[in-house]
Image 1 (tube, rainbow, N blue to C red):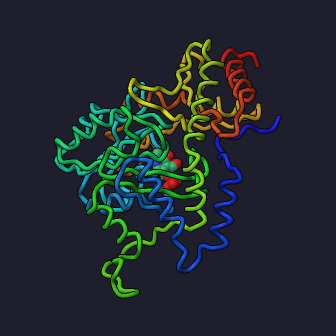
Image 2: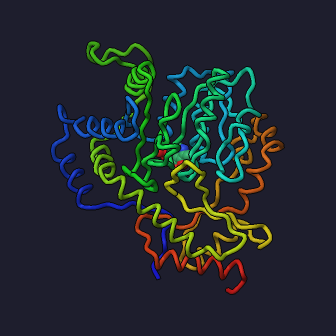
Image 3: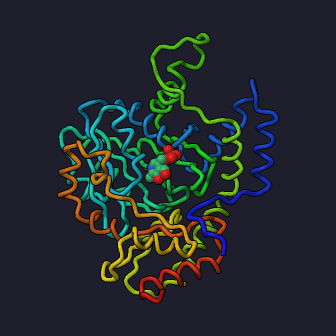
Amino acid sequence: MERIPIAGPWITKKEIDYVTAAVTRCWYQNANLYHDRFEKAFAEYLGVRYAVALPSCTSAIHLSLLALNIKPGDEVIVPEATWIASAAPVSYVGATPVFADIDPQSWCISEETFAACITPKTRAIIPVDLYGGLPDMVAICAHARHHGVAVIEDAAEAIGSELRGKKAGSFGDTGVFSFHGSKTLTTGEGGMLVTDREDIFQRVLFLRDHGRQLGNKMFWNTEVAHKYKMSSLQAALGLAQLERIDELISHKREIFGWYRAEAAHLEGVTWNYEAPGTKNTYWMNTAIVDKKFGFSKETLIKLMGDKNIDCRPFFYPLSSLPAYRNLEEAQRAQQRNRVAYEISPYGINVPSALSLDKEKVKYVCGTLENILLEKR
Ligand SMILES: Cc1ncc(COP(=O)(O)O)c(C=O)c1O
């Protein structure tokens, strides 16, 4: 059997046609043709006023922090369980990341774990919609507003997820998305920043284009800033994918349904949670394996790999990473964040590519069961 990949896109003739059109026509005065369409369609899909296409979600978080004027001495709360890209831009602007614990069901930050980390220095929170699941963003935003804390919703992994009919990424001062090759909607590499705030939108446009104002004289920079632009080819690919987003998400949900059905009888394995009132788009199908089985995630990944199945570890708590070994906050977080430290060692992402079919999911579940029950 061919190796089953962890992730991968669903590309059709539509994507190939759009990218071909972009590479043929989108130069010089036509260079932004697909950006304009992609951004407008994305904002409409999310139900927000503005969307800015960027080279990555990391750059979208960076620009959000800059536009919100986060500075050295400020603290920004980030969940323990996420990719380092959620937190790294906090260091880019010289602020301090404060790692909050996660909820045992949603695996996301909660209002309570957020509240436990607030200090007079807290300026922003970056809640993450982990693996496509959502925390209670309404409660988090209300709590943030009460404390004068800005919200950057990291919806990198959650395009199309919803809470009470409202789309992931549309809750905070800004929302950010990733279109990395592994994501449900991909442009190879790419990202999007969305906001309803005119001031943030204008500031982001300025900061991502070397500090020049649209309409100013040419090559006239008023601040030293950044070069964060998406290419036309990526924007064309993104637009084609966005026009197929319902189909992509339905298939993601179908794949998760297969996992649930195939693994339903397997006791001691906990899968992604869909809280009442939310729609999870299951970017990464994830299994937390009870420690009674005696397998660490690293061992499980190795054993699944031996059977041609690619898996990935549940994110390591950020405060445990060598990257943060000199950060005092990380040491405090290691003591405080019990749930993240309990769950992370036993979690694996299982294959979640859009190319999966039912037979492969059956094979993955059967293999996991054999390993756990030591029927190797
Ligand atoms: C939660 C989260 N935030 C941010 C990012 C960064 O996205 P990008 O690779 O587009 O910069 C990722 C990417 O995997 C992610 O999963």
